[in-house]
Image (cartoon, rainbow, N blue to C red; front, side, top):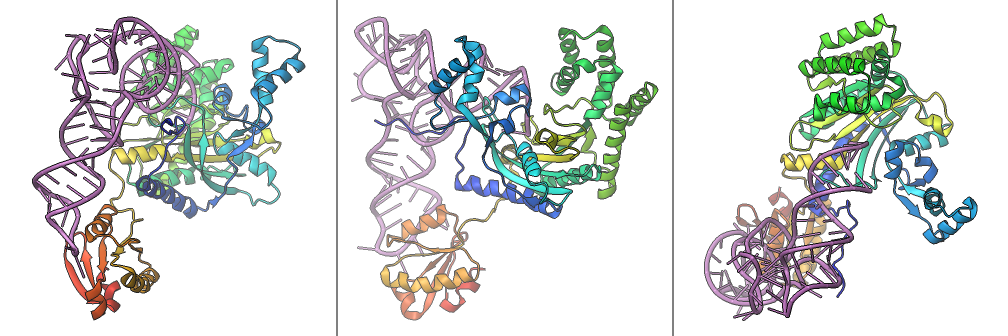
Length: 467
RNA sequence: GUGGUUGUAGCUCAGUUGGUUAGAGCGCCGGAUUGUGGUUCCGGAGGUCGCCGGUUCAAGCCCGGUCUACCACCCCA
């Protein structure tokens, strides 16, 4: 017997009901993007491997799905590797074999392909270039709740402008999208410059990435990060400073006093990056408040926020749902000063955000926030009484459809119970009955499936009867 | 990639210290109702117990492996 069919791990099928909900999310996001002047872009599912490698850090490289090409089997890769390396040492061969068996890969995110696109088409684009992109991405990760190997990202980026107005605009996009979706969220901001300032302040810049990664765990494990710093071998001075800093943070996160104090210390020591970082964050916050007319307490600074991506250089954002049980972020983004530099185009600063549609879906489902009626279902079903009646219905069917009403004719002449059950299962609002009697009299019996009421109307009045 | 939990009908789950033919509810199909769904009543179908192997006279139950989903780490949307 054939084994049960299945799909690869971390991937999903989407049923019609699920698709209606997903489209609701996509169109909500897309409408906001368009309203802010972003234009659509699509790039291929696969990129050249070298376009992607080295852009997401060591861990990211491992999570890239490589495509094994025709005629480049693992065996041929191994033998070529042995040939060129002149060794049979397994470890030495592993990496070169991988390179020889794949030269293409599935996209890992939308930002890097976007950067590649900008560089390739720099002469045709109008800068600042604002694009949005809603497409699936793939990661060879270990699946978990809210973590898939194939999922959609909804990105909006502005490239070719250093203005912080772009950051403000993107914040407004985030707030508007979640407002439209009816979801309470917390938008957290931080700045790479500020984090670098901290590094200078405590003299840990030689290990800044490691330092920041541990700091990022603060939200999750709290003061245990102090222990992590100790384990990682940071000096007593650093540990003392950090833990005092964290105490302040826990007490009054994002508090003005906290930030003022930090600013004062940056100034004393002449740490310009730290000062800039703080000034920028305050400027962005002012802008958001100014635009909306009111302070928005759900936009806050989180000095312990980091984002793993190597390319962020300025402000960074992360959004978490305040409802539901999902702890991971549902939207993230930031400024990157030199993303296109690696592809040969210098001085192209950009800033972007990315919505995780699949996670947003999970949260909306869990919290019951999807609208009850997402449309998509037929409004009127013509019952089928046989060939003569069906032929007659086709005319009416066309009229109803021309009026913009989704309608269908049951394709088979089967007993009424079955046709009504079909209408019921599909959530069809009305059933039009034209049997022998109705045909003779030129009328149609219309049944309201919700109330069960039934009335006979002239066929010319059918459309009026179902609105 | 490392460690842990899990898997029985389409769905949610029972299944005793290993012991005849593996159960329930919901759903599905048929009938009561040859022009009426959602309610009611009657009947029916559907499972090599995730997959492969082992122990045993005997395995849904014990052991090993593997896959999936989930959880922690890592990282992230």
